[in-house]
Length: 417
Image 1 (cartoon, rainbow, N blue to C red):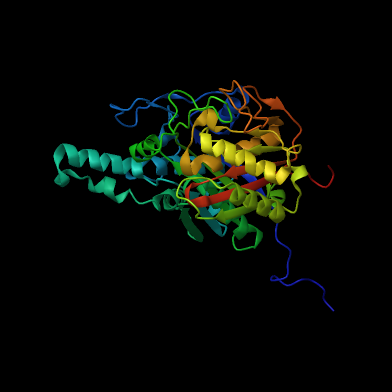
Image 2: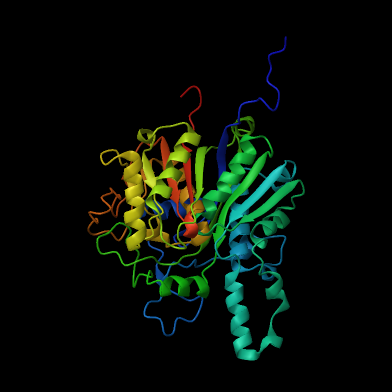
């Protein structure tokens, strides 16, 4: 009798990251970004995206020296909003970094999933400014057409010429990057697709800056996660797109492997519009550990959501303590101290940071740190990267409405290792 399992009974496929594309305020492309992470580079600078007259604070982490025409070849750049330019450029980088051609991707069943908070709200700022200055008849039809959030994923499809593809934009606010990666991970391990381009993208916009400003959470100068004297977050922008494929596929084509996706956990507690909830965060972490088939003691460091606000840092640290125990908390860092809060791109960029940390053997620092808040009580790897032989890392993402997502990545080791 043939004991070969049917497709429905086959074990889930292992999923690995083979390509990483990045657009951030501390570096564009994986090499420059990794250098910035290791040296604790700051992306903070005065805001240029919109007029900050009347605001007491005007710092953010904007992307500079970004030439979209270097990466976007098939789509006229003026047909894309800034966030879509970021996502398409990052996807192009990721495909190239994975050692693939557009034809290679087109030949496979594929998925594109991009998380976002604001979509193309930067263009909405432009539309409003035009109406205020010149009246509604001056609205740009071209800008209006490129405004929809779905363009963040569909533009990647268009740029790469994909046909056998599912494209989705996931709007789960500041956890959207991890949601998008989890979506692609599920599709790959279940055999629904052969390759997935997953991540997040957002561009700096007035709407989000004003929203956080009115909440009293914009820092005057820098972001200081877990610091006793922290004053809030800085908004940022950028994108990270990861190429995910099955381990079997990666090995067959001799691809480099940055990390293995081991599992993830999601929550949507809806307990409060903006306040984080400790128990919900803890449940999400536990769900991720269960999905990955591991216990808390296996985690070598945590990439925290770590916004630098009073509420987030204490609540997130308490949730970590609840899961790991007071004596078992691993180093817990926040790269938002460097790149600001990039909204829907945040956890995707952090996932990329976790992957390069695994391959390069270091824990990124939490910069701008002076004194750890005793209520947080975490080892935030202050100010300087730490060499480390890492095996498994955890990437936290927390969002308004309790949309929490935790991703677990591991170092890939072949059988001989």
